[in-house]
Image 1 (cartoon, rainbow, N blue to C red):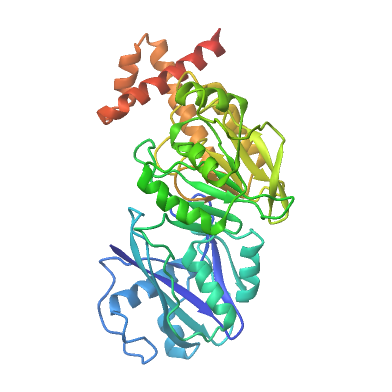
Image 2: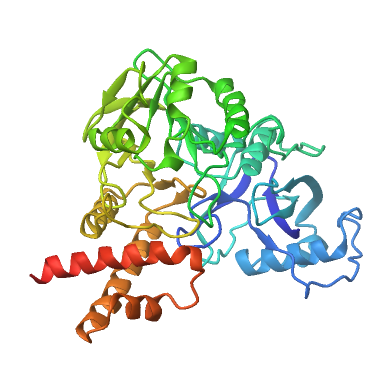
Length: 448
């Protein structure tokens, strides 16, 4: 497990947060406190000033000094020695939950300043920085306008009570691994559950969500319930029933998005909503009687499902990965639940008969034009901005250009596969072949 450190700068009334750039590979677009990983090169020399907390090993403190210098161009040692820094306190330790393959132990160190400092922010890392009261920042989160990791949200909640908070803040994710599936709410109003599912590697979980204000005109929707087996289903049910829901929405027909949806609907006496294409494909795949006894509602482009934080949530048809795939978003475009249009773990497969590369390009281009504040994928974390959509589309365009060149040089599908997917794991080769076929179909249609 790696170690990292965060600098929580405060005054008597305010706290300093940055918004990370949308193009970063780690937590893009997230509001956070400055900080980063502890390096082997960070010194282990003891710091002598009495303000430096003795319970923290020197290497962590030197990493703090380095990160503050790199991200804010602020010399923390000089600030301590000059009296500009009034106190440095360990305020919390956050350990990445065990379901995340990249685990960190992060130390939150509160640095109390005499007054606000006008930091010189590294714009390669942060879009901007701001001094605000904890109340103001927490209100920003509650309005759905702040994307943040759970420890940062816990930090704000604690500091709303008092900026002089002196005891360690509980940064842990409140769930019991043997009894529940993880749930995080990095965007207020978007409860993200992470059950294990029968999905496409390297992902092993499919996000399921509960969205909706829970009022008479704003029912709660459970989206894509797909635990992988009976044991995971029981954990999943314990978790979602804590929140409750009124209806189920299926984004598309792939098994890792609807497995156990019928069982859950019958158990909880709720209806299922989906596109007509998804309905037909699931019946063909799982049997004509799969939805027996369940009220079904066909959803299409423009339908209003519910309200999230008071904003209408509408349906968008986004074919390409799957002909019947639906996405949803609130009218203020604070987020766009894109399903399998993109992934932050692995890549999207486009394959016949349900996939169409031309429509996939068009769906990506449509989301770019809508320009939502945050993108919600079916696999991986919520991400800020549309940079990942741009990257995905550009990657596909480059891949298609390579395939076109190889076709022009009279290469076969096998030769194209060998050229483009060198070293691919054997179990992934069939999916790569189908994606190549989807590109070739698009190229031939456009050239005809």
